[in-house]
Structure formats: structure tokens, C-alpha cells
Length: 620
Ligand code: ADP
Ligand code: MG
Image (spheres, rainbow, N blue to C red):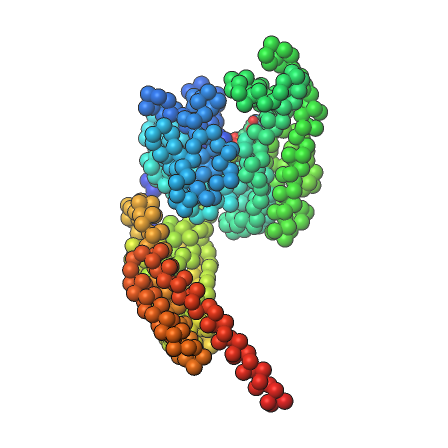
């Protein structure tokens, strides 16, 4: 039963000569890749060697911006003006990051806990989106230099656990960097694609992607079937990675040098020297059996066995996460068909050995683990460009889809960037006693109020059997098929009522309109949040007014004249407050009414119980 059929595909055309680039926007390092002669390659920096761009942005005094290696050099000498790990802040409010603030060497703005975080550098405030934009600009510059041509279309990867806010923030950063972000792809999906996993739709399987980077650990379990990469479970630790190993090695060197680690907090350049030495020792030990170096003019030494003893507990913690992910997905290690390694820290032999042992499988590790995500992103870009015609194109919804709820609020049912085909639903109910009809209006867009989004169509579910408000169970399902056609279905579950009404399809939305809607949603986020607050307060007030009237009708004999009068007065005050646009004012009126009537309601309830008990006695 198709109630609304809407083609979501916007018909934007990708020209043959367009290069679409793949970007891994990492916490520690970022990379850009593209297809060269049918093979994905990562772009190297000016030195012709390094494909990694450290995800670090430095603001020198001269007003310029440094990104990458040049910025990383300033991490220790000028921490307040050098921003790293900005990915941890994407799409987060200050409240979300409050307890991890100590981790950052720079200032996170804390004047409003509800708003999205900002970072203070000198006298300017930057959003994580703007800072990520700087990194993306650097990557764009890199590839344009390599290809001697402007590029504007990109695929960007994000962790599988990124929520809609974080994905949107990433997409926005791309737009601000002058990139048309055709798709946001999950990092584990990209890693699988880099190994060619999932390219044959006839072979369904479950894979594990183990990603141990610089500062974070992620394990993702994917079920790949018919070209769809479904995330079964994710787990991990946002503060566990190569940096922790480096710190353990620094401590180890300090004890060799008879040095109190406290001193490193004061002597920053010694701290940096030891940290760099520790990192190179760690990297060397991925190939060699021992490492000899010098610090403060004295020799230091660490063996592979020594390093392994230091990092053993860290590796155990990653395996605990793997166990939890398997449990969440309800599968055993034997059901995992393939294990893919991602992240620079998976070069460590102990890590490989433990992971292989845990899953009981050989590993997919032939590709460079810090490039594998970017390589996969380039493959995804190539599929989008239509260069791999035999491959199924996995599509996503470009904008959120939802329905209008009371007060003109947008209730998103399928968030943007959801994979296609897709199905999602939610239950609603009526707000008025005996309500017979329910209007279902479908919208597309990111704003909180439907009036700012795009209406796709509406229909009325008629003939709901009369029931008290809140009792009907109306199930609304959104189903998008592989062609991107949306079907909306509504059903009243108690009566089984289903209404069939056809709505003329509306046409797709252009790239420009979509970009404009996104920019609007960023620009108006604050305002929307306030409006949403007012509307929610008003809805609550209206519900309470109705309940209050009912209460007075049913209990007028139970209440004293004064109580009746005060309740009336408080109801009137609330009625008046509900007209205002001040949500605090409405909330105060709600509280006043609630405070006064709570004991009355309690008394009414006791009365009802007493009557009920008496009734029982009489009848027995
Ligand atoms: P992210 O995904 O967080 O951006 P990466 O995947 O780039 O991070 O991993 C960076 C981490 O990998 C760093 O901690 C780095 O020291 C570590 N690393 C890189 N090469 C090696 C190696 N040969 N042996 C051990 N660790 C390595
Ligand atoms: Mg990574």
C-alpha cells in the first residue's frame, strides 16, 4: 500500500571528467586518496614521502594558519594556539565534553553548556567544524597540486558510531572547505572496500574491523549483504591508542634516567624530546628486537619484550571491547568471516598476534593500516563516479525525513545519511479525547520546525474509533526502496485501521537547494532550539490545562472553595503564560500549578482508593 511515493534522488549529474576524492579525516592523522589507473593511491606531501597529514591546526601570531606537520611541531611549544584531536569535539556540546576537558591543551569555551562547543584561540572563537575545514582545505590543496586541476567532489569517512550531529558537522566542514560532499562513509566500511570485501553482492558475510589509531580504539562488526554494509555493533575506547603506549614508554625511559616524571610537566621541551623518542622506539620495535637511543646525553634502551610487557594491559582492554561488541551483536568469534586491521598501531606485532588469536583467523593486513580507510574512500568515490559500472551503488538519504507533530515540530523518522533501502517507524497517539482523524504530514529537512523544512505531502488517517486521548496506537512506517522511493504507511494498531490515500509525488531537490537548507539549519540552530523549547513548553502547558479542567470537574466536592479558587487562578495564569514566547515563564506557571495541585491530586487518589475498598467490602 503506497500512500506517498516520492523520488528522493535529486538527479544531479556527475560529469565523466570529475575526480571524486576520498578523505580520511582522522583524530590523529588525515589523508586524501584518489583512483589512479584503476587503483586507489594516497597523495604524498611535498617531501614526496609522507601520505599522513597530522590533524593539527596552529595559529601563529602573524594571523596565518598552519596545518599538518608544521602545526604538529608547535604542539608542545605553543599548546594554547595549537589545536589537535578536534574530531573528538565534532557535533558535541560543552556538556558532552566537560569531563574530558583536561585532556586538551587548548581552551574549550564553557559559557553556555547547552550550545555546541567552541575553541578559543587568542581572541577568536572557532567551532570544531571550522577547524576541521582547515584540515580539509589542506588536503584539497594537496591533491589539487598533485593533479594540477581543481577538485570539488569528495567522500569523507567517519567512525561508525558517529551520530547524526557528528556526521552533519563533518559534512558541513566539507562544504566550508569548498567540497561537495557526495557521501559520508563509515570508516570500517571504507576499510572493507579497500580489501575488496563486499564488492560481490552474492557473498553475504560478517566481518570485524579492528581500528587502533593514535588516540582511539574502535571495533566494528559489519554484516555485508547485497551491497549494504550494515553495522551490527560498535564498541571501543575513545581514550586508548598509540599515544598511551608512548606515555608508558616515556615513563619507562624516565625510570632508566632516574628522572621524576613530574619534571616533564615543567620542562616542556624535554617532555617533547622524550615523547618523540618513545614514539620512534615503539615504531622501531614493530620491526626490530631492541632499541637504543640517547636522551639528556645518556643512553636509553628498550627491548620488544619490554615494550610488550608495558602494553599488554592496553591490548587486553581492546580485546574486552571486542568481546562486548560480539555480545551486543549476539554472535560468536567463529561467525566472523574476516578480520580487517586499521590504524597505525596495528603494525605492532603483539597487537596482531592477540587479535588473530582472539578471532581465531588470519588477518587482512596487507595494505598500509594508516592508509586503508582513505583508500577505501577513494574506491567508494569511484563507484559514485560511475566508473565501476558492475558495482551496486549504495545510496543514502540526502536529508532527514519525518512528520509534523504537535506544535509544528519536525519529528525525524529516517535521519539524513541513512542507507537506502531503509525502513523505520514510530508509534504516535492522539492528543484529544475521541479524536477520529489524524493528519500525517511528511517533511524533508534538518530544521526543528516543519515550516522551515520542505513539505513532501500529507494525508489523513480517518475513522479512528473514539478513544480517550493517548490510547490509540498509530504506527507510522517510512519505507525507502532501493530506488530511493519513499512509501509512508499509517496504521491504528488497536482497531487495525489502515487508510489508503494517494498523494501526487513531488519532485526531487537540487544540490543547491539542499546546500541552502543545510546552511540554514546551521545558521538557525540556536534560534530553532529556542523555538523548540517554547513550543514544547506550550504543549506541556496545554496538556496540563486539559488535565486540570478534568480534575476540577471530577473533584469539585472534594476541594474547599479556597482550593478551587486558587486552582482556577493558577490555571488562568498558566493559560496566559502559554500565549507568551518565554519558555521560562511558561515553566514557572507549570511549576506553580503543579506545586499547588500535587497534594490535592494525592488526596483525590486516596479518596478513590477508599471508595474502591469500601465498594469491595459491600459486595463481598
Ligand atoms: P588516527 O586514526 O587516530 O588518526 P592513525 O591510524 O594514523 O591514527 O595511527 C597513528 C598511531 O599509529 C600513532 O600512535 C603512531 O605512533 C602509531 N604508529 C604508526 N606507525 C607505527 C609502527 N610502525 N609501530 C607502532 N605504532 C605505529
Ligand atoms: Mg583512523
